[in-house]
Length: 106
Length: 106
Image 1 (cartoon, one colour):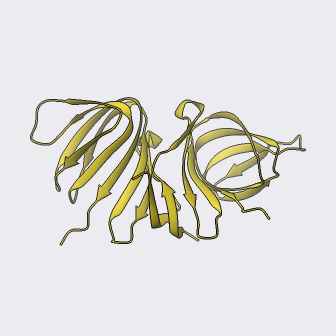
Image 2 (cartoon, rainbow over the protein chains, first blue to last red; image 1 turned 120 degrees about the vertical axis):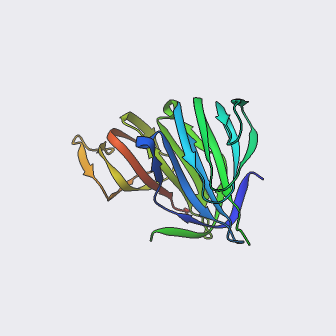
Image 3 (spheres, rainbow over the protein chains, first blue to last red; image 1 turned 45 degrees about the vertical axis):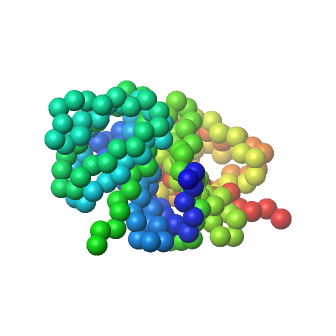
């Protein structure tokens, strides 16, 4: 799926890590929240509330998922899942374009 | 208006100037194209095809509009219009969040 339809889009950007990570928030028809974002090179740690599905659209990075000790390298398109109430770390080598989904729970 | 509704949103980012300027494309119900973008500090020149309305949501920059010789300083929210088939220049001092609209012509 290359596009979302019937989305509500918040105009203002989400800005993290001094602008190294920025995103826009969409809410889809079924209530799913999605953020479309850009990460510039750097090392980041993020915490989750609910579970997240992270789809890398392009870029080059490593990710350390919770409960693992091995950094997973990603080159280009890749999807990974992060459990709720956890932390994950990213080392971004090249500008990375991503789509993060926060499924509606319950 | 803090959000757009019923928008079609292209998933992949638009990436310019080596990632210093990035945006997402939306198409609204009436066919208006909108890009929501981030500009990091730097000096940029952009060309227009049709007319554009540029709404600065936050940031600090100067803009040189076509046909003028005076740089206009913008601090925070401001809107300016750029004619079609022209060029304009921006000097961005601080991360700038913007919403650019490309009205449907005709």
